[in-house]
Amino acid sequence: MRYNKFAEILSPARMSRYLTATNRDTRKTMALYRLNLKLSQEFFTVISCFEIALRNKIDERCIIDYGDDWLRNSAQANGVFDNQNTILTKKNINDAVRQLGAHYSHNKLVAELGFGFWRYLFASKQYNAMGRILLQIFPSKPTSTPTTQYNQNYVFNQLAKINKFRNRIAHHEPICFVNAQSVKDSTNAKQHYEIILQLFQWMNINESKLLYGIDHINKYCTQLDNL
Image 1: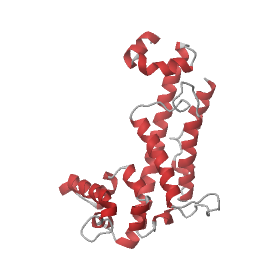
Image 2: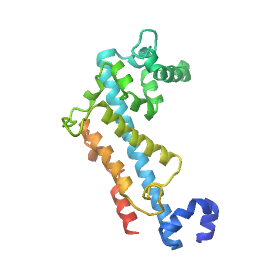
Image 3: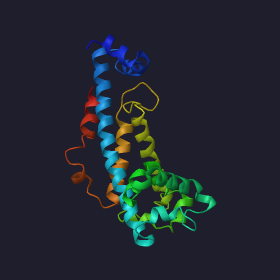
Image 4: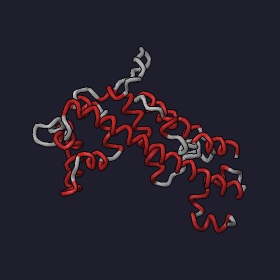
């Protein structure tokens, strides 16, 4: 496809950053756009696997202390989230239960709640309400040092970065540039990738085996840098 038609379909405004980043080389511009899509697809797959692993680890840990139906019970009267500090968490759970209706099961409720919900279980109020047990899903987490506290707040912030990056991909925003600049670069993507791999390792999950055959992020980052 010729570039003019390509840009007409996707919009000149959307393509302007890609065009600037490739010094107006239209062949490279289309190649960069396609590489960004490939990289985004790879990340969405990897983040999906990470999200499922994270919520399952949380679920397994909470079942030990709070029982098989802990999530629904936590939002009921006298449940751990039945207080003013965690009212939104309680609402999110109850909304999801109502949405499932007659099709409710604990496993479906776990799957119904999004990445943001699971991330917020590491926010201070939710973490305290849960009895401060959730860091136990990271048995290989490093010991804190005077300069870096690997506490629940650290995990919350790392998950926030992944969540924001995931939402950027979901809204079809580029991940192949330096922040808000029109300069192609894989650094930002690699940094988020490292966070995901790090948290997999902290959970004692062999990410290489889990993602075998579906993770080509480094490959596309190299192609991006060499374009």
